[in-house]
Image (tube, rainbow, N blue to C red):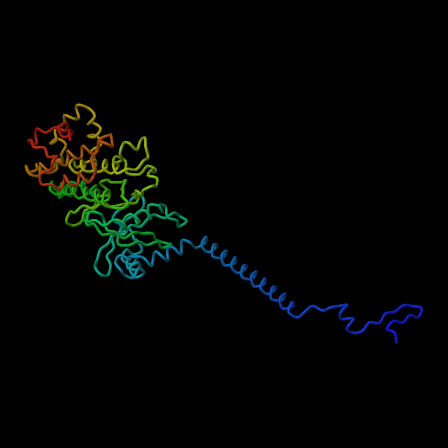
Length: 390
């Protein structure tokens, strides 16, 4: 029988094999590939979504709680120099000062207050608590970090020691070596305490400060410029050893970086060139050192004397007339050291920074038994103009 049957109306009957050939089904392997691709794409999309979610959450957490995380880190580093438990020492300081009660306050400055704290070990430390704004933020964040950075770089017998710091959300403070006799400024203000600071101790004070600045300028890498050398930032221990303190405005002189800055320092100690340039150099500290050295010898700030040095009348002033009259006349040996120190101080306060000596030379001169800058002449005949010839 013919596979085709025509009976008025055409109809076609196909065998089963012919139908399969006419409507083919996709192979089994191709379906598996398609499924795998879809699964892989889904996994990739899921991973990307999770990654973006984690990144966004992390950024949000950093933005909200950066200060808490840093405080936690700083608390764990507290007293790392002592290798003590930072949290335990933190609690000891809070207990020792009764939550920084005014009864333990030994000084107040522009950036913070200083407290005396006796730890359970019997050791006494000075705690400088920085002022906070009403919203809890640190008023001088830069100074707080600057001082930590500078003092962790400096190790010298005439630089106050930093024992640790705390960056708690409620308290921001630094912990220092305790200097029993306070600042040079306080010593000179009171007649009785000024008398304790005899000529030998005053000469040694000048020498100690010179050694510290020489180390900072010439032996630290990078060089450290203090920028606020003044009598209030020179502290004495029980043995009248002088130490430089307060590095909140100090600048680490990095090679290749900008050495320009805003005005910093204490009025009356700031170098005159800062009136026309903001460039930071070691000669800023040299000038301030000269002012402090003269203040030590005179027992008062030498502002009027420095101004008078530009006039003939001021230059004719006798050395004996500018020395602190609260002390008895020095011996001949000490007078020679006083003359040398005064001669160097006058060179340091020169208007032209290039004409000032550097601290390394100053430190070496003051350490010599027979300094090159010595001036041999009876005290009652020496005039300042003679000492200005260095």
